[in-house]
Length: 376
Picture (cartoon, rainbow, N blue to C red):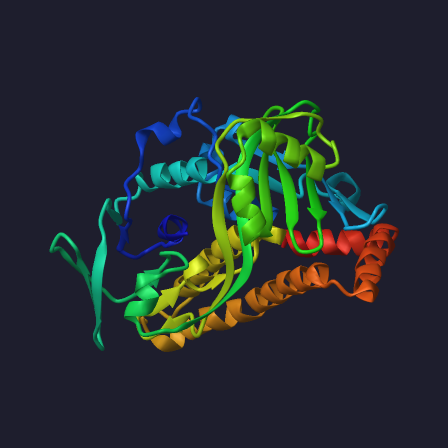
């Protein structure tokens, strides 16, 4: 997110501090698939296109989603979304993290007003009335009128500002891996709600899919310990044979899932974006989208400030906070609501949630409204 914000800012001198520099092999189209993938919505594709980043992504490292099939936890409960019927070209694009980061970093090479410090580690930040002093581990010191924390869920920038974050574990681990599939995915994204766990198979270029299986911690550890063939058979069964036989392309990795809400996203000379500000469950695939929307909103806020106005002025930064408060809260509440709805074990709730899928699937107007809301 920090690289996208650095690319979007205009008329300002920008320093980008990153723990790791760009790996030259990442840009190689023959490089192995990345297990960390994003479902990027059309609104953020437009944002990245404005930055001349989207065009730099190799076509063999991105795949459009033309339709989505969502299955409940009882037979016959299903919901389908179709881009054509909604009057749009794609519902989303599936992109590898490494390919996207490579395109962002290469786009920054053309900016004379962006200085990159990488690899570099921020050691401490001193907040003063007129500026912030950022001290790097190698002894260098940067002076800034505004510091943006885009350093993830364990944000050092957030901690250095004394901002607390409320954390709530979901008791789940996301197991991610990539597979070759026997049957063509036809650019359809699949999702199965399993009474708490959620399995998603997302289309990649060619006959390949990326798996994100959010599972209870104990079961996730069992999945991670399986031999490749055994894992493939387990996923095939959970996916009800939808894509035929699967072959593992990349080793499975696990990531613990939690919701994180920062007590504040701005302070004097500070703004937080992306996971440093909020972390949500991945069942809706909206984490990266929220982060790019943060970057876009903060860049727009700073560009619209009065001439000569200090970018670190808290009154300016509060405009960004207000612009993002409602969309982030709405998305976090929606994702949380879906998680707890499908985790509930009461028979009445189970009947209600699965009946809801069937009812919505029969009302095209409602489905199209949901599609357009998600795409915005």
